[in-house]
View 1: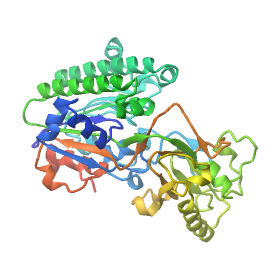
View 2: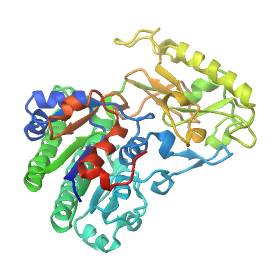
View 3: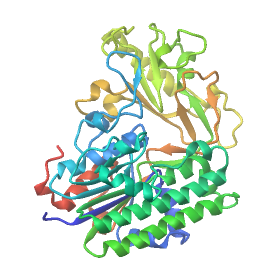
View 4: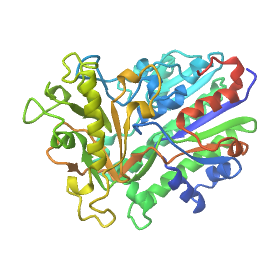
Length: 444
């Protein structure tokens, strides 16, 4: 190896704006010091802004049109039925396979299940239903269990009582930190990747508390971020000089006001029918439908080019696509009954953007990409439940993802001049260059 060692820490779902606020308030002095003496910048992420898509873009250096992951669920070929994609479905190599001569430690990186062999250690992040398939080498399984290692917090129990979530966040963080630092000490490594996903869970349930000092759970949020900052103090001691440190999030977050139901909207606009009055799954989409949606913001045309029994010819699908975009762009808050919000006008657009697939994706996976992707107006999340009986819905969640407020920190100030803007798919190239890119396979 001719380059530096590189350590990457992911803080899932942490927005640039919130992190900057915590830095200014002196709440995270250790990470703030790394940012102050290095590069700290806002980063855009993939669309849809979900972890499966974003972390895959990070780890491959490719956009979804090349790596082939567009959500936590995907459509089966030629059918309106769902399957659950996994690490095995990614169509481009990960960083540690591009640079296959290096020793790597990867801990809790989402969408790396099932764990594949590599030169080093891989412990998959969520979703990882069978723990034995989430660890490579499997000789580590008993040791991990002895450390009470878990992939994620128990979000089912978290819905019952916030105090369960808070305790679980700290317990999981403690176990992950112990495992990460033990592996860094015991295993040879050139590349380390560790992801803290508790921040995303905290924000979904309590983002209002994180951003509001008067909230009765605000202290819990601050204490958790201080705990993370203590992790960075220990990490700096372990890394010493001469290691490139990169810290990033996979997407941003903002306060959630309400959620719009995209399939209900498509049904209201006349694009979608179901075969039953109480649809249970996407399998219940009527063959005559023109379009349907998948979580979180994806719309697919029911075209014969894509589906065996599709209703639309290629030419008709183009016409429907153009008309649908116009309809969605015209859609207003008042159309889903949002009229009395103090901070939203009834004539404000529900969708900030509506993209055709070729406008945001490039590559040989374009044929399996959603036909349209919507970006909701900030604060108004989009869901694609097939059983929704109203245009909006509320949940226990108080935060939602954004694609335009992720962050990137590098412990090297020179990147401030070298990077005018950055996307999450750009980070792999920075890592490979630091590792000694001439000895790695090409990203192109």
